[in-house]
Image 1 (spheres, rainbow, N blue to C red):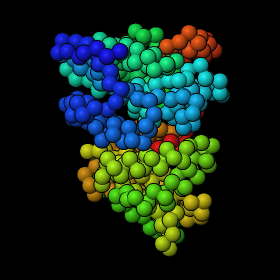
Image 2: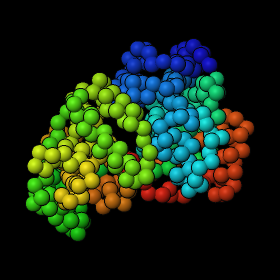
Image 3: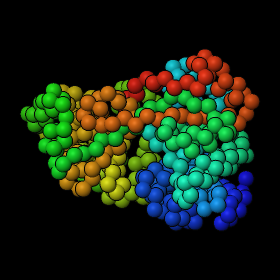
Image 4: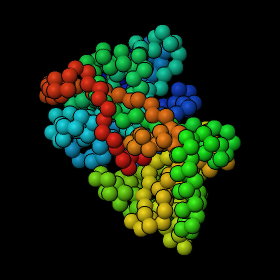
Length: 382
C-alpha cells in the first residue's frame, strides 16, 4: 500500500527511512527516544532486516509508527520476537510459528511501543485505526502472518479501539519501570526510600567501598565494544536467554554512530580490571538504563550490579539535570523497592492469515477471552 498522504487524509507507507520522515516535525520533535530520528537511525543500522514506516492522516490529526520484521531466523530474544514473546508471557512454551513472519508496529524495544500522534484529539482514534490498517496491509504485502505491538499502555483508549477495530487480540505484557528522582542528590533519593530499604542501599555502598570497587561514567567508544559484549552475552546466558552476538555488536556500534556522547557506559572496576558494565542512553530529561554485563567474579566484590545499574546512574543523573530513569522491564518488585513505578503494558496481536487467527483464538480459549494475567518475572532485559 502506498497511498498519497494529503492534507485532508490518507496513508503512506515507506519501505525505507527517508529524509522526509526523519525531518517531519512529528518525528523530529518527538519527546520519546524510541520514536525520534536518532533512534530510528540506530534501528535501521543495527537491524537491517525488513522494516517499513507508516503515516496516516485524518483531517488535522496525524500519526506515525515504524514496523520491524521478524522470522524464524531472527535473534531469539523473547522480549522482541513476537512468537517467543507470546510463549514467554502465556507460559505455553514453543509452538507459535503460525505467527511468523511478523512485524512489530510501534518499535521493537522492551517496555515501549510508540505511536507518534499530533493534532485533533477527537480524531486520534480514527487516525490510529487508519494507521493500523495501512500497517496491516503493508505487512500482508511482505508476507506476514501477524502484526504485533508488544508494549502498549492499557489506558490509551484510542489505541485500544484501533486494535479492536482490526480484530486485535490482547495478551499480558511486561510493565515498564520508571524511577523518578526527588530532590537534588543521591541522599534525597535515599531519604525517599522506606527505612529498611534505605539501610540496605547504604550497606551495599559500604560493601562496594570496602571491596575497592570503583565506578566511572563516560561516553561509549569503539574500543569498549569488544570488552563489553562478552560480558553482556554472559549475563543473558546466566538467565537462560539466547542473544545473537552480531546483533549485540551492531547495536552498540549504532549507538556510536548516531547517539554520540549521549551513549554512555558505566564501568565497574577493581584493581584496574573490569567487573562489569551498564550502558546508558540520555534523551533530554530521561536516562535509559539499557544493556548490562558482569564478570563471573563480580559476585565476590559486593553488590556490583546495583552499584552499576542503579547507584552510579542515579548519581550521574542528579549531576546532569536528569530526573527520570527508564529501568526497562523485568524484576519489577526489585525496582519498586528502590522507588520505581511499574507502568502496566498490554501486547496486541492482529492476525493476518487464517492460521494465525486460529492460533490466537486457541490461546484465548485456553486462557479465557482477552487474557491479561501478570506475566512471569523477567530478568536481564535492559
